[in-house]
Amino acid sequence: MEHNTSLLSKFFAYLSYLFSGGLIAGDMMNFLNENYGAVGSCVAIATLLITWHYKRKEIKILERNLK
Image 1 (cartoon, one colour):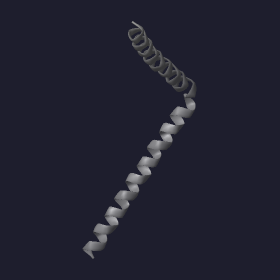
Image 2 (image 1 turned 90 degrees about the horizontal axis):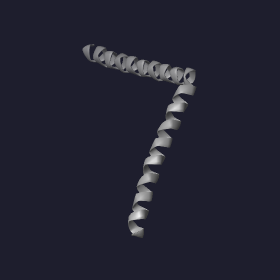
Image 3 (image 1 turned 90 degrees about the vertical axis):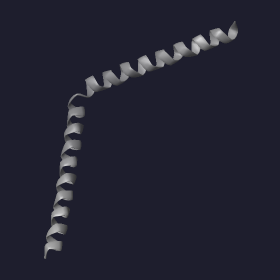
C-alpha cells in the first residue's frame, strides 16, 4: 500500500507543479496583453540600439579597409 501512496503523492506533486506553471504563464501573458504598448516600445528601442551598434561597427570596418 505504501508504494501506491508514494506514486499517488508523486502524481499530485507533478500535477501541482504543472498547474502552477500554467498559472504563471497565464499571468505573464495577461501582463503582456495589458502592457503591450510599453513592451512593444521597449522592444523597438532595443532593436534600434542593436542595429545602430552593428551598423557603426560595419562602417568602421569598411573605413579601415578603404585606407
